Length: 268
Length: 334
Image (cartoon, rainbow over all chains, first blue to last red):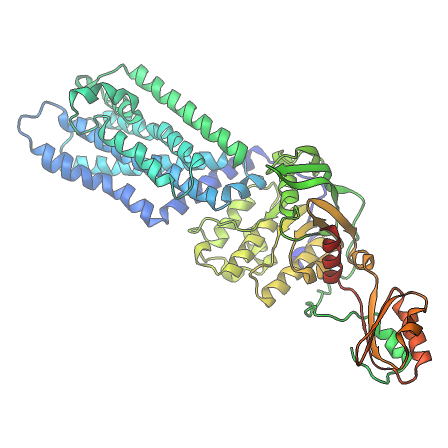
């Protein structure tokens, strides 16, 4: 202990500034440990990483996949819908519940007092949600390829995968909004209030009654699905213009992300 | 201190040693604290005429308080006195309603100023799944020139906790880990809120020793504590808050001297009326066996007592400790 303190100039009289490389490292380290932290929470990791592929194999392959008079590319449509399901969980729950619990625990307050780089915590949450979403959507993709149920080229799959991962951003923004405005105990309830309607009312894989079909446009999950299908060039499932879908997702990100940021800056 | 029939010179020498219940203090390390630099006049953090209200509750009412370079400042006060509010203002976690706050020459909200501080808060739950080593690595990444993880572990004596997940540590071990996070950035100014709550005696001694070493190397420390013996053992300066106001500030000895009266009690054949007339005697009371004298200059009273009554026995002198001074000051402020 003493040898360490014997080093000269142990405690600086002037504060050094952070170099850009060190600042970048701080963002990366924050994301790295956020990822490790989430990965070590089995209650989070297992359902959201494994369940989408299992659900896809059961409903998308065994049940829907056995239909003999299904239109062309319906399996591709189902793959896209279940991949969006895979993205929804980590993006909504990972951001909202984790953030709300950590706010309750005083961790955000500590981060505000420490010289954590601006936005590093939120960016880390979003990057980790993207990583988990990529794994979850990837597991659906692997299941679909193994089951031989999709008729898409590698480039189509790549484009769709990019949309799934990017689609995490607006969903995470909603999650961050929930996490910054609710307590740790209330956040799962509010996240479910967003999750289940997006799951069942955005036409991802469940046929909707006509009256509900017009309302699918209010759910970001519908727009992610539409963008993914457009990226793969599957025109027969296009219900809105891809540019409009992208615009809605951008607005969702700005609105909910902005409100979350404002709340964090004001009250932590 | 009961010293019947003791030589007057011994009694007078004994007066310099306060009685009371302070626990034994850990030995000072010989290297780092041999010639510690004294506090300088440079101010690292300031509250100037700060007022802060929460609804109808006045948390701070015109408080002026500063932290000097190289000092350990203990901020004391009963619950609700405004200690946490003062710290929260310095850390930029809240804004004053009136007055100004400076941290390392800048507004506390500036990230640049916070790069010079370390923080240990109460009731913070860190990421349960991360190991102590990982938490240090994460926190150190916020600073421009931090200690290495290994150096931080060594400095804080937490090597044995390095590979353990935070969620599996005991309460005291969690506080040790939090302390490691507070110091890993080589802060110029360290804020510690009740740092030894939940620590066992050995861990507390270790933390005290580290704090003294840090101060000896130029790190200034703001400490809030309910353990007055902790403030007495560590602090260069004590600030006492009560009802949102700064009611006293100074060195431990200065705070003690604010309640400089001493209590002398003995068995004596002298009458209370006779002693009451002596210089520096404030009051005299008698019970069936003993006489109790309150005096400002206890040494002079004891000398006269021994001269006036050769049969004086069971002489006892109590000097005010920080705890008594604190109690009296906060009662007066109530």
